[in-house]
Length: 174
Image (cartoon, rainbow, N blue to C red; front, top):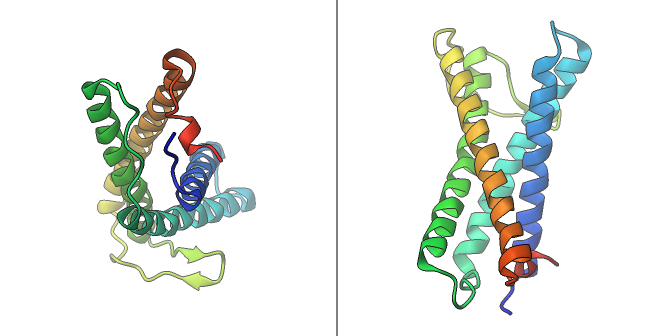
């Protein structure tokens, strides 16, 4: 069995954990009514997670460029190979698009992003009340799209493990 490299596994699972944490924190924070200290804290944490996802994604892309992933298992139908490649490409696009859209939404809302409470990131766009709801919607749609693709990705891995009984999942496990 050809496996992913240990750094690739680490980056994969770290990205997954960060995205899941950001997703559920995003759901939680938006359900809090009004402006409360807890809600503001959750928004900060959500932004920190988003920036971290973006940073890890950059490292991940560089690692992948330098390290070829293992080939699909022998005998895997061509349509599944193409579907997996398409899903991976879409996931990579969303791993960048979701945090960038959230960052631009914060900029349009006039709310600074201060990474880990220490580093204020530059505002890429001026506060813009007309653009703010558009970017909020874009961030939401991209996030929900990512959630759907992540679920399909996980279900496909489980299908390969329990039904096809191949090594697709095992090669990403430490």
